[in-house]
Image (cartoon, rainbow over the protein chains, first blue to last red):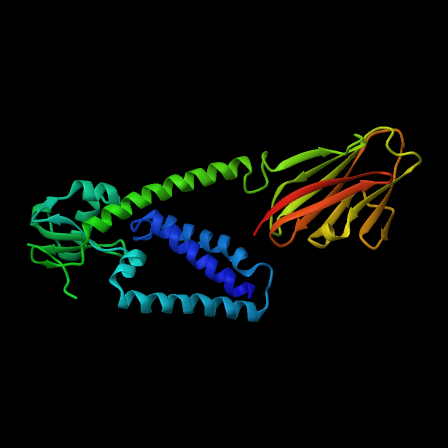
Length: 146
Length: 169
């Protein structure tokens, strides 16, 4: 019983914490972010296992986490409301070369981030060549050139 | 369900939802800061707020304990004997069995000379170098489980001293 409850609580906590920290938090993984992810998993591991190093415990925890993931994906495909709550919604940050500055500040995206992705994806040189730039739910930026 | 349009773009943007989630995020950050500050002062154990010292009714001994502890986290229980408490060269300190069932004793400093198991209490017998002098007995332990619990400590004819703890999961 303990294993399932621990996995459940941990899943809910991580979901909440990552939603609060915003979609840009760990979107493009820098070296430091990778290290941070490792430390986070290391820190949460103890609470998840709670000194029980049996295979049964490990299997129960993995099964619980995967079951929750499947359950949530089933719910999110049926309800767009829940989908938005769990996975967030995309946000247009550039339209016809015009930057939506307040949206970008609040989502912690800079003009440089947009230009970087535009060069990378479309070989775009300037902001005014961008028709749309969208901050996707994953935290990545996609660009449609003019 | 039709996907919303922004200009030529079919994108499920929802500005109202976005505004609400930004607001909730701000609240979330504030709550996180508050929780971290509380943790720094020891609200979640292992800090100045969590340690407590209680004195027995007749003042013959004091107990320093954590009123806020954590599951399987190192903790300690210190029993301070006042001068003149112990007649003779042996201190007989007991803890109630119910409390001991909720903790694992890692080490004791000093080591007791002997342990006596009673129906509802365990008595530890320590040898003292000088019976008239104050001394401290330390139990290094791990709390198990979660929730409120009560412990009782006594010395020979003095006590019991009751203390209560909250253990975080």
